Structures are given as structure tokens and as C-alpha cells.
Amino acid sequence: MEVLTHPKIVHKNGHEYWEGKYRICSKCIYNDKIPAITFDENGECTYCRMVEDLAEQYKTGTPEGEAEWLRIVEQIKKAGKNKKYDCVIGVSGGTDSSYMVAKAIDWGLRPLAVHYDNTWNTAIATENIRKVLQKLNVDLYTHVVNNKEADDIIRSFFKASVPDLDCATDIALAETLYRAASKYGVKYILEGHSFITEGVSPLGTLYMDGKYISSIHKKFGSMKMDSYPNMPFWTFMKWIIFKRIKKVRPLWYIDYNKEDARAWLEKEFDWQYYGGHHLENRITAVHHSFYNPVKFGVDNRNNTLSAKARAGLMTREEALEEYSTKPHMESDLIEYFKKRLELPDEEFDEILKQPLKSFRDYPTYKKRFELLRPMFYILAKAHLVPMSFYLKYCFPLGEKKTNK
Image 1: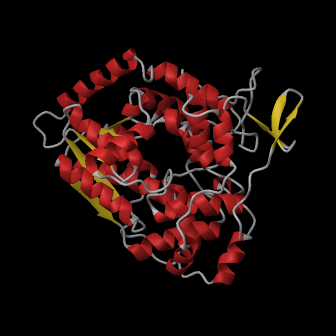
Image 2: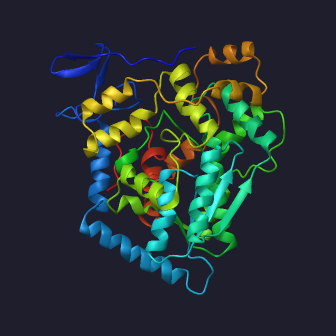
Image 3: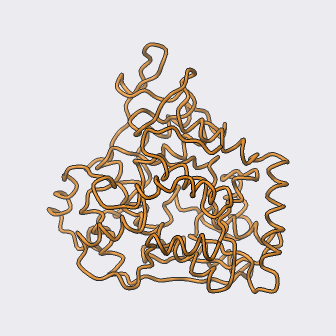
């Protein structure tokens, strides 16, 4: 089966469209296939405005933003005084998390690196983690899920026909980070996310929560979840309200360029690039490079390419040109996916043809998050949940979002 190809741009009524069908933002490359997207009088989309608001709020890449981050660093040091570690950082072997650990050392912090092993790691990612942590003398806390159990969860999401094939990894990593922080009395988790270089993924292209995972697995899975670290709602509340473990994103404050960071990592640690955003893990690569484009017509590269275009890291034309190519994918990756999940060719093809579904078709915490929006706004302002969680999960689709 072929990965989708991207249509040509057509100019109509002063705007740009995908072959006359889908209006495209005048600043990035998002189009109105994205649920609940709107455009202002200048043709800029909802997400460009959201990023502008975040950059203004966090003073991203400015002296004020840098100063605010260094003030938070002092808070982290104070909270971690007389403890072995003062922060935990999730590591995947990717650019952002590798850079985040190295910068934490530069800031004088004492990080504990945390890894959730979903058993689909590439050899490159595993080696990257080893090289960086060994040279920096940073300890590693790892939770390894039973590989059969991990495969059963992934197979369940594949059978559910939802675009969130790998969301179980993200929830498990979050839960593992909280568990590690709690075990060592650490009050801060540092996340290596940058809305400047990655954007904010539109709701409707990715959703995740603990109930979503358990409900899909209950319907389509075949074995009990024992080693998988899920995060039910009240466990989430325990971490953020009772334990008061904060999540902060340094890259929301400081000047950050992913290409420069990658070059620096290669020079300092003999770190190796893995071919594209999120491709350091095989199931994530299947998700982004094959499954979503083929089944849902969604190419998740538009998040990063849109972010780069709006930030001036590449021209909009360059972003569109790259978007018109097929996503990078490891050879024989789909055969590996089918063999590992024990999916014969006929069953694999039949599942791909099943009607499209989404998180709206299964039990989730989404309505609860919306009802508790005022509480989550306060928690986001206190760094107890990421602001992106509040913006993406606490509003009904189509409702105007504000982080002010």
C-alpha cells in the first residue's frame, strides 16, 4: 500500500487551498482538514495564534525568558537540597531529551534520567542514551514493560481503528516519570518539548489518557495489563495535587534550535541521528510514517514543518516542498510490525480498511477534563500540568482556547 501523496497548492479568492479543497494557513502549512481549525482576517490559523500567545506568555528565547528559567532552576535546586537528585528527565535517545540532560548538567542540576522501555527501541536510540548518560555520569531509572503485554496493547489500538496507535507509550512514560520522582522525593520533572520547533499537536490527530487505554485494551486485548504503567485519573490527581510534582519545559523559555542541538550532540557524544522526528522508536515510526498517513490521510510531519515555518527556521515553501515527499521509513519496518504483532497479511490489510474511528468512539476522561477546566488552568499556571494539556484537553472541540 502506498503512503499518501500531497496535492498541489491552488490559489482561490485570495487564499491557498489543497487542489481547491482544503484551505491552508497563510503562515504555516496546517489546513482545514484539522478539526476545529479557524483562520483570522490575515489567514493565520488557530495554532499559529496559540503559539504566538505561548511565546508572549513565556517570553521564549528572550532575555526575560532566559532569566525566568534561571529563576526556576534556583527553585529546583532549593527543593532538591540534600537529596540525591533534584529533577528527573525522560530520555528516549532523541534530540530533545538528550540535549535536555546535558543542559541540566550545565545549569548545575542533578538529574535522574528516566526511560520507559516499550521494547520497540531502535539500536541507535539505545546507544544514544548510553553515550550521553555515561559521559555525563547521570544515573538511569528504567521501567521495562513485558514485551507481549506491550504488543497486546498496540495490537488493540490497531484493531480499534483510531489514529492514536502509540499513545500508550506517552502515558506510560508520564507515569514512569512520576513514579521515579516520587520514589526519590523529587519535585520537578523536566520535559524536552519545544512548541517553537514542534508546535502543538492539534486535538483530533492525537489523544491520550489512562481510561482511553484501558477501555480499548479491555475491548480488543487478550491478556491482562500487569507490567504496563497506566495512569488512571485518581493516580494522575495523586501526582499533581497530593505529591505536587511539577512539570516544567525549559525549552519554552530559552532559545532553542533543534538542528544546532543535534550537531552539538553528534560532536560531544558521538550521538547518532535516526532519520526524523519520533523515529528513534520503531512503533512510533510505524505510527507516524505509515499508519496515520495511509489509514487516516494524516501526515504528522505537518506539526514540525508548520512550527519551523512559523518560527522562520525554514521558509513556508521549503516546508511545503518537504511535506510533498514521502515520510522516511526504515526498510522492512511494516513486515517487522506484522510479524511481531502476529498479523497475517490478510488480517493486516482488512484492519487498515476498517471504518475510521477516534477517541470519541471509546470511553475517555475527556469530558471530565473539560468539566474541571478551571482547576486545570490553576494547575497549569503552577506548572503542575503542562499548559499544552490545558489547551488541548480541557476545551470541547471548536471552543475558543485561551491561556490568559
